[in-house]
Length: 146
Image (spheres, rainbow, N blue to C red):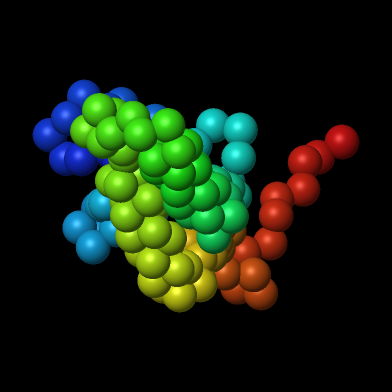
């Protein structure tokens, strides 16, 4: 999950003081969206890497391996008639990972919209005019005398 600087927390105060806060939109304050500029990478990169990690962790391969491990545990215990371990079978892992896979797939569809939003937020502001607009009397840079 991505750290979310919630208003009223120390992390929010620090990130806001460092001018790294991107927005305070509640719909993106869920641990799945980059709400600040991290050090060392862009928010879009953080967003992309987070989605990549989720997709890898909740991949069909991982769900299948969990299900296979569970099936092998049950089969081996059945072969030796050792059903005292039934309480150790972990159906939750298979269901949680399969559910996570569904959620990541659903999140991935909204991911493109959020990347567009990040592109807008990350767009640098237009350059500030020092002496008025270019072409006006005050818009030309001053030349220093020799």
